[in-house]
Length: 267
Image (cartoon, rainbow, N blue to C red; front, side, top):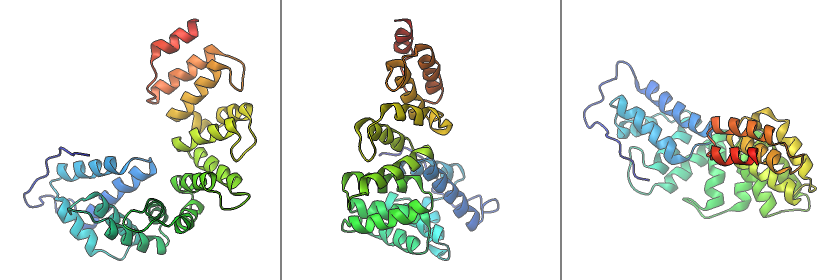
């Protein structure tokens, strides 16, 4: 991803407002907040660089001060991210990122555990190791990290490691969905409709979605609920309710075509 952001090359000018720890904590806040909202790495990187640019703080300086504060596992997780996304450093440092994520994970940082699991699952900076990835996803999932719950659950569904793996996978993905993670919501509905890890039950899929306000309030959840009402899957056709939920989806940022929804309503 190409980032068109002007970064000041002058000396840092806001040292009175932001001392080193405050700079680290602010960058960490952007990093953790982005992960909590399940944003992609490139988007989090852009947000960090934009904040640094506004405050005339060099990315290289941030990398240096984070590197010099090695007494906090969450800082190690941030340092791994800076290495991976080349913030304040250039070139491929995926192995360095792996080492920092591993150090953070081994010191009980759930975000570090989750990211280490991703590295091991995908073979980033290290040889792929699915068994080790499952271990670290489990640690993060037990700490209520929704992405880890989803990834571990999906691994159990796709690559079962025992007779009850698919059922356990479905439970994990359902828990992730209930936290509002959109990929998990979509997969829970898919599991219900296809009988994967759970008995096939379209009616249950509809009621599960309808009765969870957090999921209905998410873009994908409101979109899915509208489609159930409009198509009559798992419930009676209710175009009025379908249109009502569709409007909620539009307000939540779903890329619906309002004219096509109105056409369905009027048909």
